[in-house]
Image (tube, rainbow, N blue to C red; front, side, top):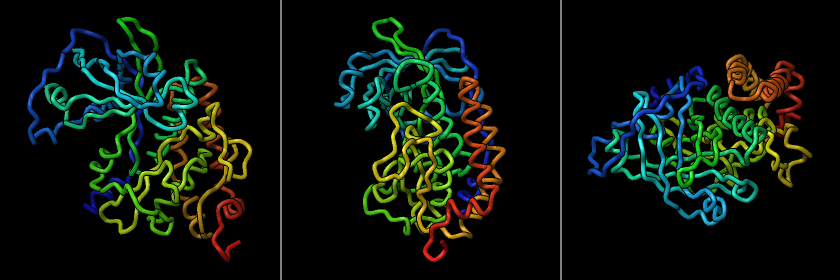
Length: 359
């Protein structure tokens, strides 16, 4: 298992989705019994994620007005989700969905949602028993909000270039229907469920207990700190377990963390993002380093690590063709500023070194 995890740390290039699939007759699932062999079948999330060269289209037919009105309650409501398979057949699933998340439910028209299918229906269609899908939607209608959504998806993809221990994501085109009428159409993205993440990595989720930086695998922690600085995200914390998923992974005696939720990052630039009251910056576009007790050696080594991935990271940004050109260009320049800093050793030391006795 140790060798397997070490191999996973080798970076793989990211494919950006662009295509679409044409419709033909649909397949509707029937309930059947679940057997142990289902564990070998790909989950519905993995099915979408494996479509590297296409942009899946998801249609969700539900009472969108009710979802928006009652989003704070996080109550499930009925829906029908459909999509097209590569062979042209349409799949239709009876599902239930609800709003999720914290801040976005308060400030956004469209909250992130969780979709649940029945395991029996999934088996009937040849999918594994993992029956939850997490979807991030644009905050509101409009191209600016859709660009923010895509830049957050880009942030997830950038972290894939930095560490193979990451949440998988998949951009989709979402059509919102109600009473046989199309109400909305916009980009959204799927995020891997945390239980699926742990299973894929052969690890165990850590739900409770006080978390300290000293209890974490240092290399993972430093990469997270530099990454969050790169995208100008201060909306995370080890002590409060905020926007970090903690795991125990084979081959690592200490805790490993995986970052998520980047809508408050300067790179994403949502209209509602503001710095936390304890963060000494006035705007989220300002970078602020939150790493603790970072030595000069650690800062220089981590800088070199990121510089070794500079081209992959910038190419990942350049390849995000779903973004409008001006948004892609500004994101690229923002990342270049970070790498310009890393190439200046005195500035690296000034910015990142904060261990006692190394000021």
